[in-house]
Length: 344
Image (cartoon, rainbow, N blue to C red):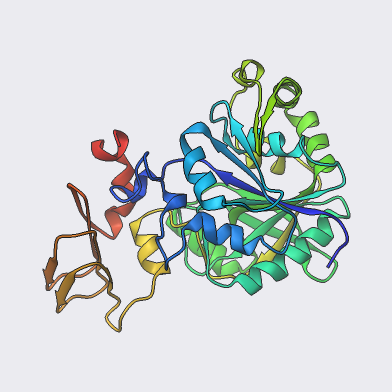
């Protein structure tokens, strides 16, 4: 393992509206035990435990959940964003609180990774490239023609386990996604990165100077409170929110990728969660009291009432408190548009 300090930057934002009614503003997706007994946030912390104490970037609305599940992790710190400005600004906040030679391992808090050993191996490879000045994305092995993810096109090899990113591709239509799989040199862009602090800040200053200036001011005029750091809200408010992909990764000449197959899922909707969970021989997944007869590929989750299902296929049924959701697998992407999810 490298002697360079590797600091996990764990991003806790969003409310997971497509997992409504389970995920709500009062108990958002990262802080729920959706797979097994640990929450997605706790699982992220556990994967990053071999590295330096993490920096968690979150908003005030999630602070209670973060502190409850972070526990007394020695050396961990929390940056409380004045408001949500997407991932470029969130990562910059963390970068400016670290030594410039440190490598940041940027991890969303709400993803599932079934193969932690593969994640660790990819992290080591990504860190090695980051030490050489590359800004590295984890290229998730694309197993199906997914239209809900961006893609990375693999370029020339860098060393034994890395590649240049030849192209960043936005979410494709189905036919284009099928062609990507057939070509065999495209990976999903999973939003996990590794780069040195100084390299990221240099690229941010070059390509998004307004974000760079505003974040520097917010850090300079911020305040500490125990393990929390509160950036100054005045300058931060002027930032136009932008993802790190658009702001930096798609512009830099130093974009690299490390391919990895680690049983990854962004748990972006109920169907994605169904696929990530263990299922019976008929493809069914049940959490809570339920009885299924002659069903295939059905997910049932109930926090109380018994759910009985007969003769259905490709259906998702969720009961949470006083809310009931019923959708087809194909309709799972639309859940966030429901008025209940919007007003949770």
